[in-house]
Length: 409
Ligand code: ZN
Image 1 (cartoon, rainbow, N blue to C red):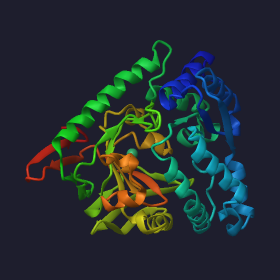
Image 2 (image 1 turned 120 degrees about the vertical axis):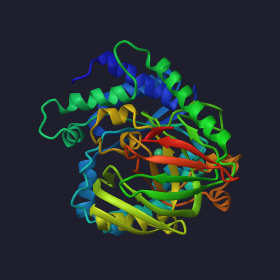
Image 3 (image 1 turned 90 degrees about the horizontal axis):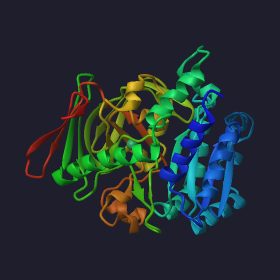
Image 4 (image 1 turned 180 degrees about the horizontal axis):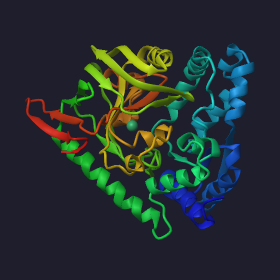
């Protein structure tokens, strides 16, 4: 153990109280690796102290997941069994607070046939999706991280103090230290993000233009009236404010599906399904990814874009200044939760219907009519080069600089 029990306690409390914001009488669904059982116990106790009615745990183990992919056939792995579906139905009834603790080895599934991985994901995803849609916006959830040895070694290869270094970076990005009250620190942070989001909403941009010397030259249309959001969200069932990602630095919206042109060049590798895609760019025509080039992981990237009808269209555009504490850490976390908070990014796949006025009450089919993309995937990739500029264009043609040299203009 490299982190003091008091810091761990503060962190667990932050995740439960500020992140998930567990309310008295709520059921909690905790998803965590078996390796982090001690931290799981801290979280569970915090949940009960916050008044949780019951805490259920979904234990995960990435070595087990790899063995499944190596030995079990794809039909078996791709099938969602009736008892699994019953659990999903129960979730729709209970609307549990969901807490995810990310700690996986980024290379956990290296060597597994990408074809098999995407087949299994696709088949399971199709069955699970309607249940996810049914709880979307109606429950609180949060993803936070806990460093495993394997993950730390991936970030700092061969370094004896890898776990400690990753811990320090994680605690810095989630604003937990010995001398502060992280709950208060998050209040201030949340306010800053919400101010920037309000400014963007006042501008009413109809499109954004991205330029950078690395080859990014891209235009995307925005949905009229769709909101820019950041930091947190509100559970429409009970009004509880929660913070889905810890850390979070981004302000995001869902663009108009099928309306973008040009090329986006990634500035960081992408870890997808435990495998890496490096040095890549994606070119769009008529709103769809029509070609992609990767220095590594070409096959995987192509698979991703063809997962389903919506996988080749954008579901998210997000603004993150390069001064983000994640970027200041100056190493790749190999984990989207962190890496997506380093700089500006876009995501292929599912969009967020919540950004539409009254979006929470719309079905995904209705949201699609407004231009929200739908897909079984949602994959963020980083395009925030140090010299990235983004211009906002108003419906009357006025151009307003939004980002210059990778940060707020
Ligand atoms: Zn994002």
